[in-house]
Picture 1 (cartoon, rainbow, N blue to C red):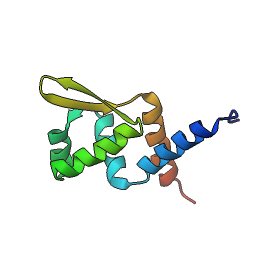
Picture 2: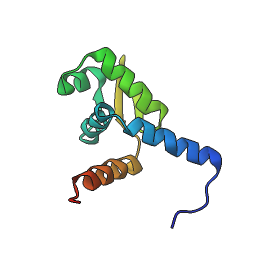
Picture 3: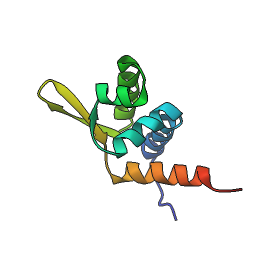
Picture 4: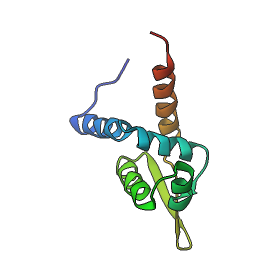
Length: 99
């Protein structure tokens, strides 16, 4: 059973689902689920432009789905926590279910 929640918590949850609603952002999260990466590495894996990936990461960061840290001048991105991994896994498993 879901516990009672405040309006702010509902809005935050809705923002998470908005961020997850784009297949390219979901793909970026799947890449990061395999290990932390910098923007260039993600762009190479996804065969996309660095600017596009950077914008995608900014939105995911704002939704608290990813974290970033600096390693010298390089910014490294990773999945924020296990909750994010569970969200991704559950969404994909649900999408793969037969009707």
